[in-house]
Every structure is written in structure tokens, then in C-alpha cells.
Length: 160
Length: 296
Ligand code: FES
Ligand code: FES
Image 1 (cartoon, each protein chain N blue to C red):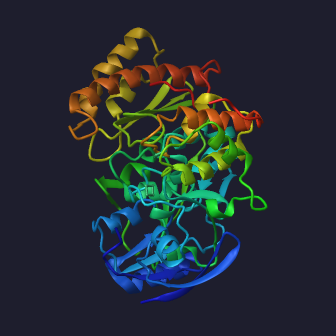
Image 2 (cartoon, rainbow over the protein chains, first blue to last red):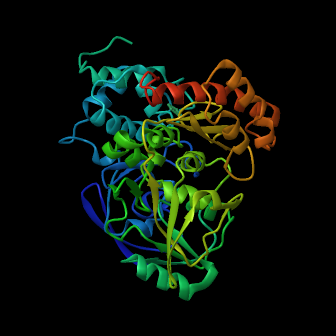
Image 3 (cartoon, rainbow over the protein chains, first blue to last red):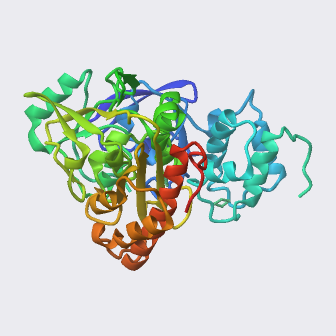
């Protein structure tokens, strides 16, 4: 039976009718047109569907939409600061961290959450924190470099 | 891929209400906590609930408390909360060390330790740790409350003594007396997010008493009584460790699957037991590697 729910998505209250079996990832993408969470493994292994749910990263493929009635979702679309990319995102671009970019929305959110809690991480810390976000293109090194650069506050253009 | 199976959803306002709804609905009702197992099982068409009862709207279920030397974990305490808790760090860092190895950060943010033992897959990381801590599982039903020791909890792969209409209300752990050191070692194909190929939890207590438990090498996580008896009261010499390792084969019954062969699992259990015993004892004695140090 369809039930109306309200989810705050990127600061905006969105009303939508869902079945109990509707998964949040699908409702965000298809029902609400929020496309940055990507459909990957759909079993919690790859991290491409990562969103922030009530301030913590979560895998939207493992959440029923109906569970989030009255809750807050943030996606990469909502991460912009005054319409500008964040420093972390700029570093990802400057350091050519991504190739196809499929993993990028999830990694941006995971790295953002990680840096907020770990301002001075080691390389190993970054590897460990991002281990659940798979990238099939890059081999991870340029992603980890950019997260470390963001932690060290390196904002100048980094030579490729 | 969408979930093909249709079910009803109920958000409970209290655990008593959850029990009422579950009792009325019968065995076709499932409790939903973090959902990190239930949602993929639904998608895989592996479970077919008529009703899903979400307990995340019930206040106070994420509490971690210590009272009268008993640590209590509410039924929604996540692995991330175990890792971040000062009480866990001060009293039972073994639980945080175990939690760090579970799945990945994004999953740990929602997955609960109670959900982990209710799902009861043989490789669950919580099982061995709670076994050596001699935890009790508290449940509520229409008949009242009951408490089951973790040793009697698991009845088979994905099976426990919990009845469908019962709700787990918490895990209680009596804090060990005196100096103690714990360890959880987990063998994985890669670090950071993998199910356990084999897991070993050890608690070294005063008077050279030891508790040892294995995970992912039998139908259920289990204690290793012959190893514990062999080590009882003796110093951890090379000879004692060799004797303990020789008993591993009697205590586990690993299988070969896509994650490892049974021979590899068995051999690595011996290696992990040896390293784990040394680490647990040196942690007990205040010299050991910091909790969270990679030992395998
Ligand atoms: S699609 Fe959700 S973790 Fe892979
Ligand atoms: S850049 Fe293609 S998956 Fe990461």
C-alpha cells in the first residue's frame, strides 16, 4: 500500500508516496530525480549509493524509503557551498582523482565525513576509511592523495 | 533491482508496542533495526515477511551504559557507536576492536550489534567477541522478559533461540574482574570490508584463565573449551601455545567456500590463536599492542 512520506532532501522537504518495499536509492533517483547516488552492487558492498542520512553516511541501497519518513538526506547535490564546489571537490578535480566518476559522489561524501572526524589522518587511515567505496578505474592512489591534501589544507593548484 | 516481495511496514513507538504488533502478526513479522542484512535479504528474495516492524522510532535504544559493573548495549547500538564510545574504550576495548573489522564505515553507521547476532550468519564478528565476554541477551515478549546466555543463543546458521514475536531489548556484559586483556583477530581477503574467513576472540584474565572463541569456522560461533582447559592456570610459554594450537582441529569444523578453503581456515586459526594469545596476555599485563593494531 502506498504511503505518503516526507523526506528532507538537501534541505528541501519532499513529499512522495512509497511502497514499504521501495528502496531509498531508487526513490531518490527515480521518484525525486536526485541522481548523484549511483546504483552499483545494491548489496552494501560498493558505496556508490552513499548518502548522508541524519548526518552520517549510509548506503541508500540498504535503506527502505519508508524508514526515512521525517528524516534528513544529504547528497552531493547539497554539498555545494554557496553554489561553489568544496575545497575537497576542487582537489579531486585538480589532482585528476577520478576517471569515469561513477564512484565520485559516494567518495566525496565518505571522505567529507571522514575528514570532519579525522583532521590529521595517515595514509592508512584514509585507505581504511574509504575501503568500502570501490573504484573500478583509478587504483585509488589519486583519490587518497586528494583526501590527504585536503586534510593538510593544500589548496594551491597541484601539478598533475 | 527492486524488492519484488510486498510487505506491510509498522514503525513502533515503544518496545511493548512492537511486541504487541509482532505477537498479533505471528511468525511472518520481522524486526527491522539497521536493515543492513534485512534489506539485501529482501532483495535476494531470501526472506518473505508479511510485516516489518521498525524499532528505530523507539527512544533510548542506542544507549551504552555501565551500572553495577554490568555494561549494557541497547538494541540499536551501531558498530560506529561502539567504536566511538568512551565507555567501551575504557571498559571493553575488545568490542571496539571487533567493531572496526565489521563491513565498511558506511555500513557500520547503521548496522547494529544486536542485529548482527540476530542475523546470526556463521561469520558474524560479534559472536566470538560476545562469547568470550559471556554476554547475556535480554528479550521481551508478551509473557515478559527473559535473558539467554550467548552460549545458548546461536542454534545454527542464521538461526537463534529468539522466537519471532520476541524483541531483543539489550545485551548485558558483566565486566571481568581484575586485570584482563582481549583481542579479536579477523582473517579477510582484503582489509576494510570483507566477511570473516575465520575469526578468533580471546580474553586473558587474572590467574592465567583464558576464554577463547572462534567464528566462521563452524555452523555457529563457539567457545573452545578444550583449549581453555589446556591453558587454565599456566603461563603462556611457547610450549603452552603449541599445545593450544594442537587442539584447534578438535574445536572447529570449517568448510570450503568462495572465501577460503577449509584447510586454509584451519591453519590460520592456529596462527591467529598463537598471535592472539600473546597479544591478549600482553594487553592484560599492560605491555601489549594497542587495541586496533593489525595482528593478521
Ligand atoms: S549500490 Fe549500495 S553499496 Fe553498492
Ligand atoms: S573513477 Fe570510475 S569508478 Fe571510480
